Structures are given as structure tokens and as C-alpha cells.
Image (tube, rainbow, N blue to C red; front, side, top):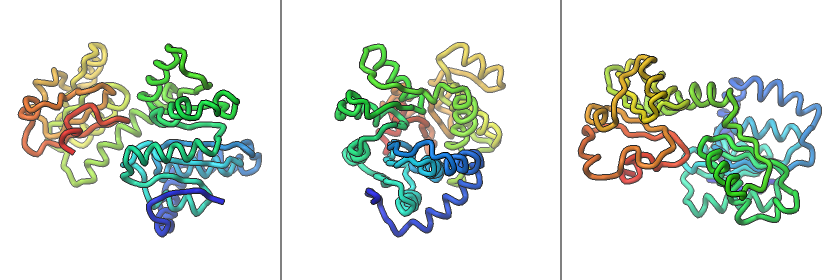
Length: 310
């Protein structure tokens, strides 16, 4: 029996189309690994709970885990990224899903708790919310050995767990996927870096000739700068780390303090993981051009003025 709470079951056929598209773009996950899992069933009897972006790509991961014998439970790691048609398609295919687009903070944690109530053995997290909730509200799953391992795939989450480990509060074995070189150099820089640019470009925004300010020059933000320049934007990078700032300079970008960069910006994108990169004040707001596009890439929306504009 499939347990679920989603927006609309009738969207399943549309979700199937999205899964088909992603399946053909993920040959390793949906081809090589899934075929092997179907034969060997290495996850038979294992319950896996994931707090992830409920997208067509995550869906194919879930179906691959299911092919390996796992009983899979999913909830959304970001209320705004859940694709309701994909959630419906997954339910039809036997995946337990508790996610819908635009859920509230209270509903967000309700979905996490519904997954943890099923006593999963492995947790796959995106931002640390599920694993931290397990520590706080379901400690028995850790103490009795029900949870045998976890993984975290974001910089934000890994930093939270590093802090917990220093305090002696991390009680489970945890694999920091985010620290893998392939994650940083390929997924973050090339995949994530393209994602936010593609979202804005998809709004029929012409990047060519516009001034695009990229706040930060880490793995994700360097990818954003690369994509913005490729679309013809004049890219300015702001970065407080002198070595990263030098990297941006040697990569051919203008580098300057954020206060100098903002007044000329047509598009501003932050990806630092820090609070108030653009401080939410009237003084800072008055520096911005009329019609400027302001975006943030990261698990939390605390880096810039979007928190008072939305």
C-alpha cells in the first residue's frame, strides 16, 4: 500500500512524460545501475527516506532505488521545487510521497515526520532538515540502530553537520556527498550554475549586454558567472575571499566591492551561504536600478532582499 499526500493524483500522466524525458538523459542511473539493481536486489528489505527536490531527476533516482528492492519514502526539501505532476507519477509507481508545491513551514516538517514515522534505515538529505529532525524528534531510530546511515548533498547541510559533530551531537554515520569532487566540480559548477541562469533565461530575459553581478565565486557561483558570460552579459564578481577574488580576476571577470557593483546591475545573483550579502535595508534598496532582477541560489533565502520583496 502506498502512503502519500500530494497536490493532485490526476497529474500522473503528465508526470510520466517528464520522467521519460529525464530517463533518457540519465543513462547511468536509469540504465546501468537500475538494470543491475533489478537483477541483484541489493536493497531488498531496506527502507530509504529522502528529503529532496521532488523533480523528474530525483524521481528516477527513487525508481532506481525501488528497483533495487528498497521501500522508498520522499518529501520535498524545498516547497518551491516540488513538481506536482512528478509527485503524482511516483505515487502511481509505488513510491510513498509527501510533497506538494508551495507547502508551509508547518506542512514541510509534517511531511518529514511522515517519512520518519515509517522507521527508515537510510536517510538521504538535501539541507539537513530530515536528519536533524530525526535527532530531535525520533532519537529512538538512532539509539536502537534502525537508522544505519545517512547522506547529505549540500554545502549548507554539511556545514550544519560539521557543527553538530564538533559539539558531539551527530549520532549517525554520515556520508557528505557534497564533499565529493564530482559533486563540486560537475554538479555544483556545471549543473547548479546553469540552473538559475536557465530559469531566468526561460522568462525571456535577454542576458546579452546586461550587467550581471555574481555575489561569491565558489563552485556554484563560478558556474553562474560562466553561463552569464556565455549568454553575452557583462559579468561583475564580488567576493570577500582574496584568493577566490583573484581566481575570478584571472578568469576575466570584473571584480569589485558589492557596494560599487550594485548600482549598475541589471541582474544580481547571490550564492554564498551567508546572511545578508545584500542587506535588507532601505539604504541598500535605494542603490538598486528600477526593474533589477534579484535572485539567490542556495538552500535558504537569507542572502538578499528577496526576503522582504516577496
